[in-house]
Image (cartoon, rainbow, N blue to C red; front, side, top):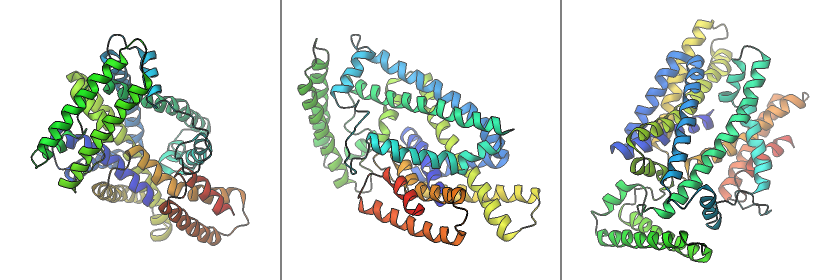
Length: 414
């Protein structure tokens, strides 16, 4: 439950970053506003409100991503179509979808995906109340099965398409000038320090790199080594600016990956599409947050409140308790969001948090299904030992985080 509360905080934190960039407001204030909005409609409408808004948000997300994708393609130079754009991405190392290496420290490989990813998905869609509540609220078993199948049929292609949009965005910025640091408000602030001249010099150097790279990319045959050299030069310039930020503004985040898409939306899209794309981001965030808060409140009511504090609670009392717990978990999620930090990116952070806990949770459920002779206290003790072991392995950075799902399940099973 704490893990899901943390995940809810991350999904509040993500859109708050966007609003902070657009409006220049304090990030913690925006965390509070975003959390309050989600709590209000989740408390007032419960599971039904979450389900109805999910359908609307899904439509907005898909429509917005299609608009973004085709806008990126249309903004590329005339000679650059989808095929050549994918070729540029391949030369730049952005199309390495399958890595068959067996190095356990390599974060994303075919083996970590097919094993760790399998157990992560099995635990998420099979044991996580934010997903299971959808099956439980279906009219019958057949509808539950259809809902689960549609999760796979829609979620996998949607995530593939989102990743493809990311690849196209990378290609877009191969041709177009980008800021030396995508959180431009930080760059503006850096220019008020003694580093102003160095920042301006870095911007000019980056502009020259983009010009040279454009000539390489528009040539009849792309020189792969020249392209990789220019991309490496760009990385050096960006790292120099990040070092200036770390020196002059130590309280500022030096990871700007989650600002790339925001910069593209605000700088290159027509006004109407900007609103649509912002709606996409808010819809995705609010959809995830509402599911998690509703699931946390339901679980707290049924597994803690009704079982331990009010065994004879009526349905009306349980509904009131659920609303109170929704507000409580909303406050906890906002608190997590306020103390959040940017990892390599937010999607990765969510999966890391899930991987730390999901292996143990799945092991508990599998023990309950297949080993009836094991007593609950033994499973509980094993879960505590397993969870502490997983946290120790993660802190020691022994293996990629996806393997934690496999390790957690196996340790508890043993």
